[in-house]
Image (cartoon, rainbow, N blue to C red):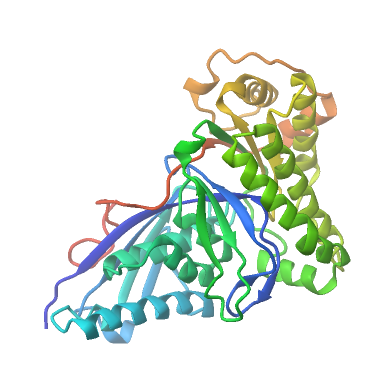
Length: 395
């Protein structure tokens, strides 16, 4: 028996949807009630790094394991198991076709993963996490699968993870087959098509959310009347307009759909019985601030969007940094919060003064900011979190 340890490492990005996924038509297969579209954010600022390793020398009795941010993580859940099973099946097929290949599909997996941002902070950590997990194991197993094929697997772990297998602007097509084989992601445009898209994230709370996305969305599906309208009319229209806006680099259209879709999503949460509230007073202050910025500019230069949590993600174009980032920086600079990039805020003037109630809420409620922008998809790396002997690497 060889005690060789096989390893593969990859990074994967966070994505923030501008047309939201909310609702499953099949909870077991993680099939959505509507299509969605997201922007992949730069991995320089937000990324998961995962090393997948396996070896005949790993004790079979230990089974597969995952170390997440230094802590053992449970992978016995149905979703993670579905991903591992599918990847193993694909590897086993390669081994059957070519008996000379090492039988990696039969070895226990040791997975080590690390985020450079707080997990469960409302920053789509599960999307980057499952995308990195699937991509790293696919690389370890040397699977010939395309990113779209791998997105089918990642989707079973976390719906939005299927969109983190691509960079740039990404759609998750809901599909209509009962078995989910057509519910996958594809790239609408590369990051290089519209490279000056930026995002300012206001982290309002890094605490875990009160109602998890999975249970929240199923309550909405079961009880919200507005939700029917959202999935039959609102989202299909928003998808069409958004794809056109991205193709034409039309920020004003992009901004309007982004904000309207976020509002529509949160309206269906409020229409759920009992109602679900993910946004708070600080979130609403961020909306008022964006409205004031756009009014002063005489056009939409900033677009807010909120996922299932209070953090605001504000999209803008690089040329409008002063109007957008300058306004928030001057309101928040007295508060001791990290995340500002000194090169980007140098010399920014406040172009607008916000209502003092709005400014007060932001100052008291934003704990940190993340300045980022559109970025690339998963990337192989030589940075390993598992040493050559199979133990977690010293960092």
